[in-house]
Amino acid sequence: MKNIFKFTAIALIALTLTNCKKDKDKDPEPEPTPTTPATTGSLKIEFEAMVGDSALEFGTANTTYTNQAGNTFNVSMYKYYISNIKITKMDNSVWTESNSYHLIDHSNLASTLITLANVPFANYKAIEFMIGVDSARNNSGAQTGALDVSNGMFWSWSTGYIMAKFEGTTSIWCAGQNLKYHIGGFGGANKTMKIVSPFFE
Image (cartoon, rainbow, N blue to C red; front, side, top):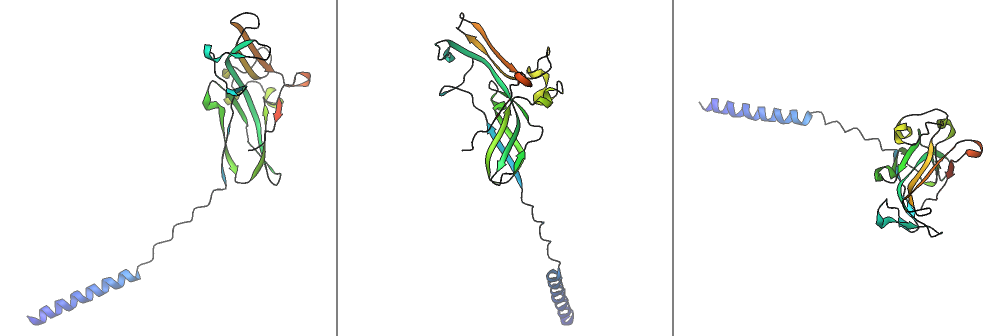
């Protein structure tokens, strides 16, 4: 009987030592694959409309403005196209947004914030963009996205985009008189697009 117990005890010790050895010989866990660091990010550009030193507000009695001639007016619509956005690096190389057409509508705050995607990480010193739509797109007829005719910025009677719309009422002639400025034209003497290059702060 003693021999049986002795044999059992030896067998258990051997089994335990064998299991320990297997654990030590187990293949190590593979190292996680390193994540490739990002090389691009996004850049946000916000547009604000001002009347003098105040933010533009729309169409109520409390938002009546007075121009330098003493005429009062208020605003019901202000929108325009921003296109061909380019940003310049410190080494003078330029990154250009593809399909760069945005409709800014100041009655829709979401549209006043443009997000540029896949912008390479770098130090930038300047930005440039066009107010309006370039002649190539004007000669391509009505299109989609920001250039869709449903946005109300395309002249059906004359092929071409309205670069900017400013509407409201004014006291210049009589109370409640409609005030409308629709600016367009993309060639020759009628060219209205403007390229601007504000400084980075």
